[in-house]
Length: 67
Picture 1 (tube, rainbow, N blue to C red):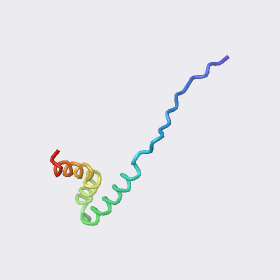
Picture 2 (cartoon, one colour):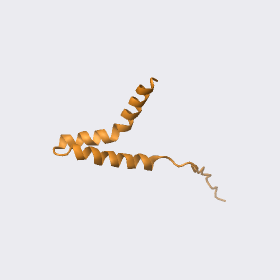
Picture 3 (cartoon, rainbow, N blue to C red):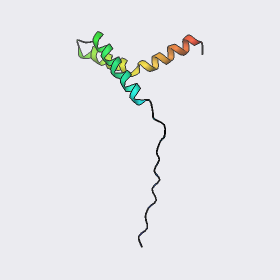
Picture 4 (cartoon, one colour):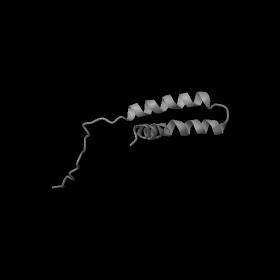
């Protein structure tokens, strides 16, 4: 009789906010590309800003709150 390997299947019952962050990234990318279009360097700056804008938002929000 062949043994069946028991596989543990993990199912998350909570959904993440990945879709919302992705839409925020796309919106920020469109916004920054509108102002930083022209050269490749400016497009790369726009992509960098679109990726890291949430970190700056949290930093300045905590700074404003005095934390």
